Image (cartoon, rainbow, N blue to C red; front, side, top):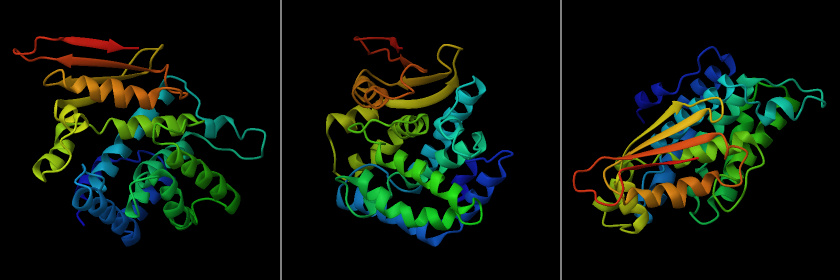
Length: 268
């Protein structure tokens, strides 16, 4: 498998994340699971991409959102919830949770689509033990693993995450919505629902720095108004009832000479 595209995921000065990133790039088990995810999604269900490209984009999104929140002073649950328990976790550990959550969140699709968040917990649990070995002590590894599994279990909109990390994963996952991902089911004669049609209207998605009130700004460029469904029914639904819901501003731009419904709008 070619991992040149994974170069976009950067560890910066985070030695723990760098070590884990190198492990993932060379681990045949994780890579095989990504292949199986796409066999389930594309070949068997005629859905959009759920393989290593989606994992890479989700990881990039999660780390970028996390770093913007950190820059504006937002404390993550891993940093604050264990202060009285003898553990000392910082933002570098948060980045580990975000990265591992991103690359394993759909691992349950290697088994089945329905209830894949729960199946992802089952598939990822032994993998996390191996990935984290030597990076953390046994006790620390137990905490990190539990936080990652919480993110996996709550990444779909029918379960509400209790942590900022889980909320970031949900948003990062949802933001992989550009038209290239949706084209697969069209070409395969698969999903031609409003979900796929709406996704085909999304031209580009940008994650940018916001302001002090809302540190994260999501700028979505659409070809036409069909993409509004993707934003209001899927993206906004994933933000609802999460610790992140009041920290993100969504700006939509629709520039089409034939577009007669709406030009742009902002969701706060």
